[in-house]
Image 1 (cartoon, rainbow, N blue to C red):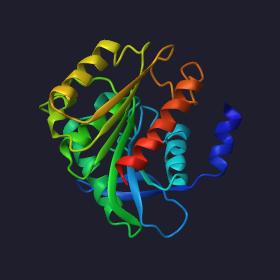
Image 2 (cartoon, rainbow, N blue to C red):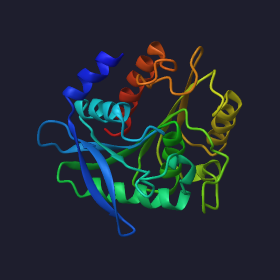
Image 3 (cartoon, rainbow, N blue to C red):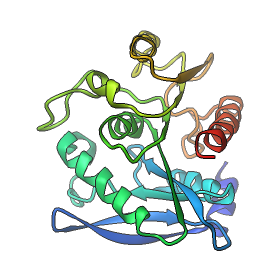
Image 4 (cartoon, helix red, strand yellow):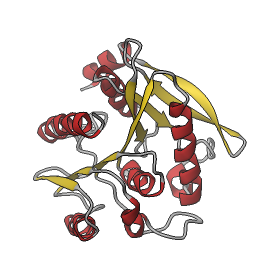
Length: 241
């Protein structure tokens, strides 16, 4: 696994860029396809590992498939905090999402079609973004937990905002996961159905949380990773056509 990660980093298609949020700098990892475009885009809401080898790998892979991939640094307000995940605030996350949308929308190569994707905590943030920001026409959710909780000064948990989703959703979950648990996934699935939101959920036996993350071999599940990624690309090609 380590060798594969090194190879991916050597052929990285991305670079760090900077934008402003509430007067402060926020970094973004941006990977752009070769050529002049125009291209659709995917905003990546990262996992607790931040802009690490895994996040960069997902962005680079999307760029090779013809998408501008942009991963905002959601921890930018807390550079010196040991566990910034515990400090995240839903209202601040909404501002970060809006700033990322503004940043990618200003790129001449962007064709105006935008999806949001997230892993782990980013899956929750992706649900939040798809619900509150009309720029997103599709959402890809990987094992997003804590859907029934408010973070920071937020007033409404993402689960209660799902009616705001404007495009199709695809979700991937491990049946051995504890957060979200299979019961949590069933509840979210039922709510999207009740709301009439187009969605498809895929569940994997023998997989728990972070099954896509090759950086964590104890959690990585190759079969689930390959199947979910192939389905993700097919979904994006249809949703952002």
